[in-house]
Length: 128
Image (cartoon, rainbow, N blue to C red; front, side, top):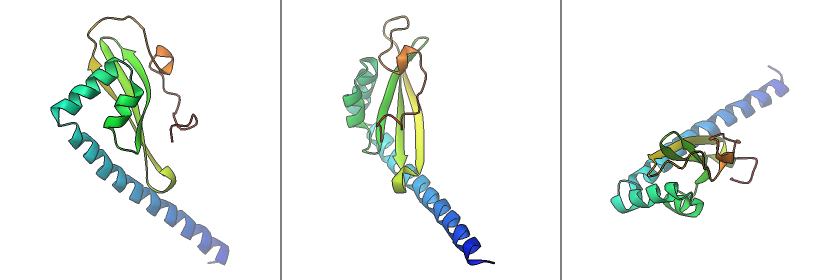
């Protein structure tokens, strides 16, 4: 095998290992975050923050690696898209939505994501 081939293979292997470590880190951090939400007061704060489209309150309840990207509506629900970066240089990105039943039918009034529930990727706009 040529030297160039060995170096290329080594870099690919390192990248895989960084990603594996990032996934493991994601598992640890997300477990801690959701464990904090088992506390009724924290869960209540998150529900209120989602209903009021409060980025700061949502971010305070999450780990430092996670951020509220945008808020949006689904029929009967108020939602927030969460994005988390883990591993070396955020080599692993996890995103998920949390939706809570709406108290009022505010018909298409959104406070993020253009009000339509779309996701702009989050990482090109300064989230991480």
